Image (cartoon, rainbow, N blue to C red):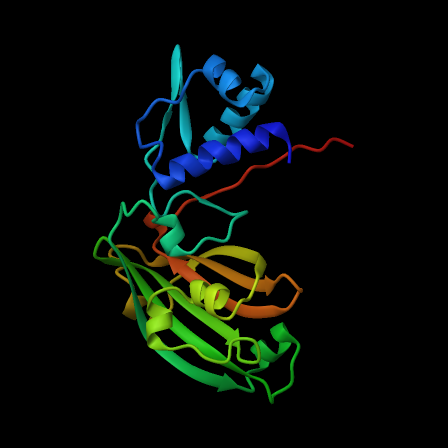
Length: 238
């Protein structure tokens, strides 16, 4: 791992764990150089990345300050985070409610995505997520029952990923995502507090284990004013 990434990760973890609170000033660049034993250029690269990812804000003539972390914005496209991990500081009241849980089999789209025959079945799970009293997210997930043989209401309303990793010992690796902005369907209108909004931000994902196995397919729909995604882009010149 590069030096500036080590500094970036250390400060990021301090912010996420609450050691560095919102609106708190970071140490100066000189003090950070002494603390980490790295050059000014390394410290500046780390601070730049922290600012790009929405953790801090640089101030003219003053030290950088820690920004308040909103649960829904920004979310890093390069990370897979549970709601509990995003809300580790308990800054929001979050409630996940199971709306449906049943087994499906022989659906052509699932058979195509998972590359299986009609003998393989899946859990279909619908969940709403209320943040500070408003249902602003609606999630539909399909889990391959050869890998995830059991899910209950209690598991679905707490943390499925915690159950998969802690109880089943699965190693979740990565997710491929597609983001679209579309009109809300009837299911979303009936489960979300959309207010004046007729459209949703929809994120469809296929998620894999460390051995390359596809175990989950699904989507999360967000009310448009409650989500922002962030990413870091690099320029490559041929």
